[in-house]
Image (cartoon, rainbow, N blue to C red; front, side, top):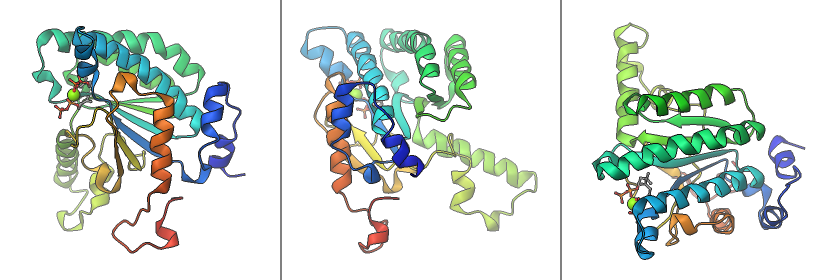
Length: 267
Ligand code: IPE
Ligand code: IPE
Ligand code: MG
């Protein structure tokens, strides 16, 4: 049995997730799902509550979606937690989000270690409050060797910043005389992205209905399948995730070629 299949048939402790898993074809589960978790503010506003309450509810959703992704056999999950543009929000919201991220990672780390989840935090971490950066670095260090779900949190992340940072690293390699500019290919840039060992996202989900990328994973989403749902992130459930995965399984991926069996799903 290959690795994907054995992971798919791994006993699933939660009976609800087990039932959801039965709806999926193991050969058509995306290896990498990326999510723009949007709509926390609208969720709170609709209830007449503070935006920060929406972010805390969003955290509860994320707990469930991480566990569901792992149980359903998704190998890599990237979520957009805070963008390089989100600093433009009111100071109280930014401060509340920093506090939430610190509290959430501290509360979750032991359970994530027990589940053998490999944590990555990608973005310009040097611009975060020092204690938060240390919490993230500690989480990455503790889980670095794990072979379960890779959970990649994009924090102070910008797609353009990532490409600019990769270009800077490449320029340094040229300056050191290691690479001739004439020899530069896409793979030289790919290798300098924040998480070069992750495959490109197969499926990009955006909640809360906006039809835009908002500077997320610009390099990697070149051929991702997009799925936008009106559901606000705090209302997004494992059932909604399975609906997105079912929709993905129906897509024909062509990568610029004509539809042929080797270009359809199955990697
Ligand atoms: C997404 O929810 C979470 C972050 C950007 C941190 P929003 O806060 O953007 O929610 P809306 O878009 O205002 O509803
Ligand atoms: C993208 O959502 C960032 C995150 C989900 C963290 P935004 O709510 O910031 O995006 P825009 O401003 O609506 O494009
Ligand atoms: Mg938003």
